[in-house]
Amino acid sequence: MLELNSVDAGYGTFQALFGVSLHVNTGEAVGVIGPNGAGKTTLMRVISGLIRPRAGAVSMEGCDVLKTPEHRIVGLGIAHVPENRRLFPRLTVEDNLKMGAFMPEARARYAERLAFVFDLFPRMKERRYQLAGTMSGGEQQMCAIGRALMSDPKLLLLDEPSAGLAPVVVQQVFELVRRIRSGGLTVLIVEQNVQQVLRVVDRAYLLEAGSIRSSGKSSEMLADDSIRQAYLGV
Amino acid sequence: MMEIFDIYLLEAMVNGILLGGLLALLALGLNLIFGVIDVTWICYAELVMIGMYGMYYLVQYFGLPYYAAAPITILLVAALGALLHLLVIAPLLSAPPINQLLATGGVLFVLQSVATVAFGIDFRNLGIRLPVLQFAEMHFSYSRLLAFAAALIGMVLVYLFMTRTYVGTAIRAISQDRQIMALMGVDTRRIYLITSALGGALAGLASCLLVLQYDIHPFVGLSFGPITFLICVLGGLGNFVGGFVAAFVFAEIISLGGLFSDLEWGYVLAFAFFIVMMFIRPAGLLARRS
Image 1 (cartoon, rainbow over the protein chains, first blue to last red):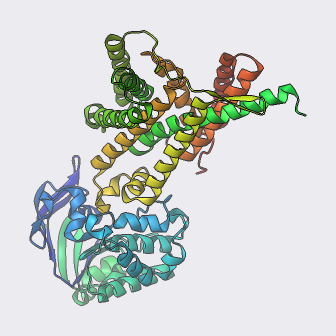
Image 2 (image 1 turned 30 degrees about the horizontal axis):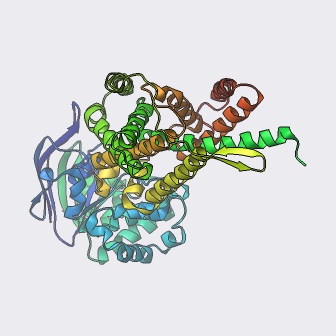
Image 3 (image 1 turned 60 degrees about the horizontal axis):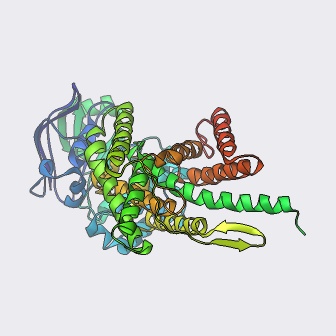
């Protein structure tokens, strides 16, 4: 479904990604793990078009993502839940969800998508008229994921969904990712919470200092000694 | 039985409210541009001046009735707003704010000079004299009542647009997080252009209403441009509700100050109030507590 080929990307004179290649198959859940500053967020931003790579290729179901205007990429079926959620804090929950359905194709199915998201997150229905910025971190994460789902994506990009949340809420978020997956959605998730994320995804890539260091099935990654030592603390 | 002074006081207060509606309309347009595009249209009042000339020529030269000329003028100034964005603001979006200020300041002088050359410095008016409403020994001019009602309707329409439509919601969202708008599938350039046209349309509406109360000349923008800026700053730049409240506060100070002495002293009081408020609440009347 999604394919990246030798992508180089960065900001100004700083290069964050060096020749990154990865792919995500339809129906899969794939994780990208790695330490702070490894380039995980940059990778997500390249896929959703927030930054353009210096070299390499990105394609989504055969469409060239790099040739698609940035505001049309969501139309290819890619929805990005950005790092730190990035809700519109002074809009209501419902207006935030409405923004997720801004594309003409999604507008036509607004009521149906809203019902779907409210079904997935009954809490959002209770809070629909509340300002998004006044909710707890876990609720804001739900709202951010809900906003991304409003566009009826094929591929969901999750950037550190567990960051800054209490441990019990982190559990809920991963449980939620599992539920979204079982609905047939393809998921690419970036996480520092390695142990948790490897239990949710099928495969994972290890990104270190802007390069893919290793990849494999999550069971293999969990068993890998170097990963166990560096990221799982065992 | 009311004292004669109370009647004057009441009349001044009502006139203050009527003026407030018009000032709120002007402030809304400027706030909209600032809130969404993060640019201050220094030349906002000059767009209104051009609109007033538009009304003058449509009514006096083409013989159109007022109610036919008004929508044409609104569209004309809306197009002017979009043009201002495309020609001046869009190329400077990533430039330092001072350059944007200087550029729109330059447009102010260009518009004033073009108007002077093209229309001359004569004071002109529409030749429409609306009657005065007499009510319980108080006098209110119909031109002010009409302006107040139309400004209010204009603001309600903008409110509905901002809250009920996707584009309006995007306009409110864009000031809260510019970078991620593309993730929502929003083309920010298009939203900027729509916002500029909307800001222009509000200036156009204001010009249709001001033309009933003021004579038209190339420098007429100076009689309400500066006060519009003060209102926006007092309400908190980009804060729509703050601008609305500040417009009525200012209008009441001008109107009541004018009652106790001359109208000019009303303005002096309003400006003094502004200076004091800038010390007390530098971020605006309704500043958000962070």
